[in-house]
Amino acid sequence: MESKRQQRINQLLQQDFSELFQRDFVHLGLGAMISVTKIVVTPDLSTAKVYLSLFATKNKEAVIANIRKHTSEIRGKLGARIRHQLRIVPELYFYIDDSLDYIENIENLLKE
Image (cartoon, rainbow, N blue to C red; front, side, top):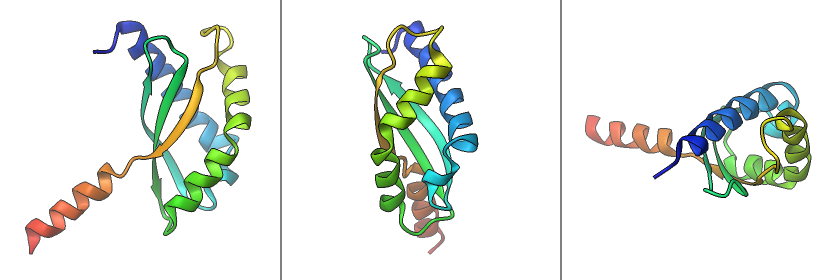
C-alpha cells in the first residue's frame, strides 16, 4: 500500500518525465513516441520504476535499451527539475509497459 507521500511523488515524477521525454529527450525514442504510463517509487524514495509505453516503433527493445543507456543523463535533468521537492533523486529503472498490447491482443482473440 502506497503512502500519500509516495503517491504525490509518483505524480510529480510522472509529470516531469512526460515533459522531459517530449522536450529534452525526443532523440532517445529513436523515432518512437514515448508515453510515461506509471511510476512506482519505493517507500524510502531511493528507487523509481518507470513504465513506458512506446508507440510507432517495431523494435521496442532497442528504444528501451537506448533509454537505459542514457539513464544518468536523464537522472541529472530530473534532479535539476525536482531539486526543491526531493532531497535525493531516486535511482531510475525503465521498463516497457505492454499492457496496451496485451489488451489489444485479448480484443483480437475475442473478435475471432
